[in-house]
View (tube, rainbow, N blue to C red):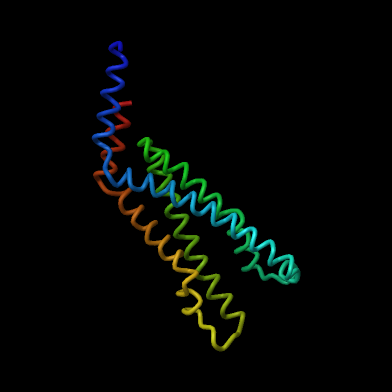
Amino acid sequence: MNGMDEMDQTDIQTVMIKRPMAVWVFGVMNIVLGCYCLEGALVFYSKYIRWLMNNPERITSGTWMTLIMDLYSFVIGPVFAVCLIVLGIGLLKTKKWARKGSILLGFLIILSYIYTIAAIINFVNQANIPTLRWWNAIFNSENTTLFIGMGYTILLLVFMKTEKVKRAFAAIEEKI
């Protein structure tokens, strides 16, 4: 090995030592959750397409809220999933853009969760079913992933904004 290779190896070891555990944990979790969300989207698509074939009136009678939810489910959700995977890889490589991107995506995901809750409340109110209340629709077992995802996103935002994580990314950027 020449002197340059040894220096590169030393820099890599320095980066590994200075990277906080939270960065590694959220990098791995972003990749895992991103893959899980992509797999879930494929399953959802197949079930939804089958359901649409049996209920074609949904296409022509949908309200703006249901159409936006469809757009969210078919486009925005998978885009967020791919972003999670890319940002997870970036966090594992301790790239500054991955930290900033994770913070931005975190805010976008929380906004989408707020919209989803508003859409559920709107749907329940429009359904006009006396036994269905919005809190039952939001807090059912199918929507527990909504709250798990929101909790994860809040933790991600909190940890990416800590001084230890900020200093680690700043130190790594100075070395490069």
